[in-house]
Image (tube, rainbow, N blue to C red; front, side):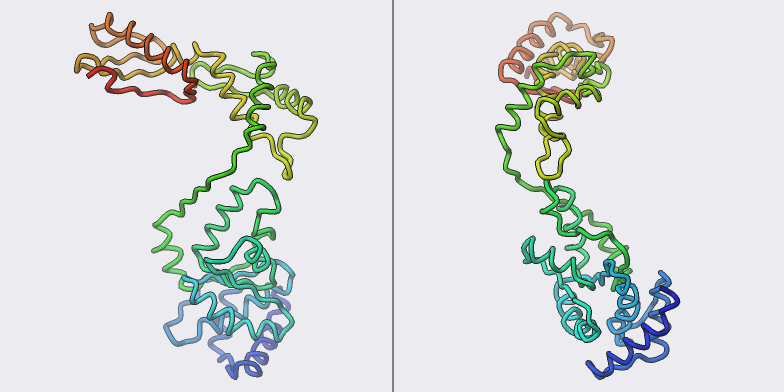
Length: 309
């Protein structure tokens, strides 16, 4: 793309003057070259950062790959996208603008444009939502990442980066898939289809187990249109944990508060560090019976406190 830099910048400079009556100064062209070279360009307020950004974005969008301009909020994304977008449209490129209120289909169309203006929070959350998607149709960022210009880089990459983006979603659980997966697990053979790891307190399917499940289902576990891996691994493994109830009946890490004193048992030796051993047997048996009766699945080391007050 470096070979096209001079011509591309000249085209953008002329188009900007014809459409917006704004002509890039030489120092702004230098800023555009720095951004294209993946460098930081420091510009004070009023020096035309928004105008400078369209230079390297146009050049890199010529490849047909994604080109983003990341801003700090919805207002700036909409303002810059509508204003500077006129230049891109004049040059024959499509422009997309991402806003927080947009639905999935609108976001997908915006990301598929030649140039996309997007707030940094929305870009991050869309990335997280895409990783939660259960099918390809639900992914909004379908093109590989290619080039991005970050406006207010110090704010986005330093200040706001201190706050993590956390996302959760309530899904529609397909009960039939969990039931089918549980039925599949009843036919699995230990040592052949799955392995029991008593030390780490978990059960893992073997490659043979995966193939066996796929043969029963008649399809791959990792198909994008109808994925089964999540349900087989979770529902099936949980059913196996019930079958191997002794796995967590004898290999848990206990922290039991008995008669206002702590009893600690090692996960492997099961040795007590307190003399009140006789109180443990009855209480632990009663507790495990209650857990198994109600099919409470324990997949990690369990810490139980305040058993007796």
